Length: 136
Image 1 (tube, one colour):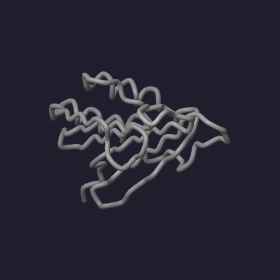
Image 2 (tube, rainbow, N blue to C red):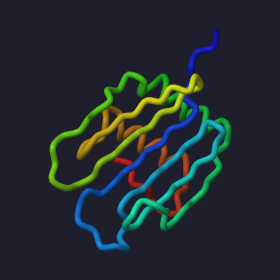
Image 3 (cartoon, one colour):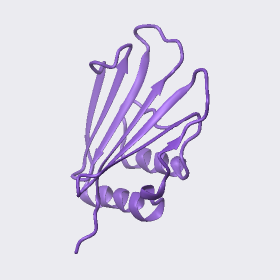
Image 4 (tube, helix red, strand yellow):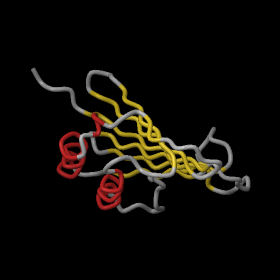
């Protein structure tokens, strides 16, 4: 029987500070195992992105990325909450979707999850972003 695989990863980073209506308030990065990546940047409200960027990643690079998630940093074993009490700053959410339709949601503030900086470096190495995404 084939094991359950990660089919997509979504990372959302949201500012909890005071912002002007035209300032970026959050970034959403969606990475799909088919190699499609979208980077949505929201200003003010989160109803409609202010800017949307689309990317395509080759099959070898995308498989390397998902293998890294599953086998190297073992994202499936991360706890659900890495939050600490803060008055302002940033809040991040990771949504992992699996081939059996399960969803794992991981949240945090201030600090990245274990191996989070490695994950961020790999993403930024894999894609030449027009605008640098907020990840952690």
